[in-house]
Amino acid sequence: MSAPKSAETTSRIAAFLTEFTADVLGKKRELTSVAVEYVAANEWFIGGTSVASQGLATFYLDIKITEGTNTKNQKAEYVQKVFAAFEPVLGNLDPASYIVIHEVRADSWGYEGATQEFRYIKGKVL
Image 1 (cartoon, rainbow, N blue to C red):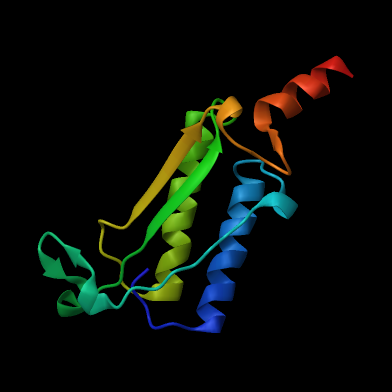
Image 2 (image 1 turned 120 degrees about the horizontal axis):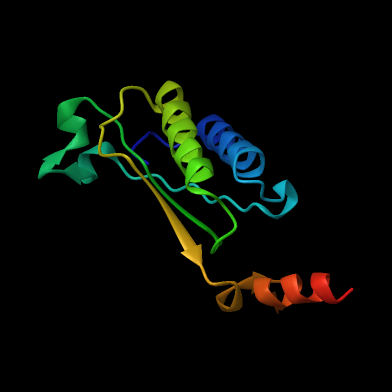
């Protein structure tokens, strides 16, 4: 995101992203991982113009979920809520502030040494 680096800002963003990921997308709060990175507004360009020169802020959120675990309505609600939550934290946002939800195949990712597909099958067998 284009903002001055701040522990308070980082905490606020991590909190609402974790909340929306759990409450809107139904993901486990205790497994939701958030990394926040800062880019100087004079080093971020949209349409060839720096956001600093426009007096705007921006962000780019890249989130990964297991393919097929959320509806279009849930994803649309998540995008709306996340965008709305960033503005009070960062100020006036450039409309080209992006939220990208990647749906990853269950056999292509996991944690603790097991894929999401393995967890699903294991849950059905028991």
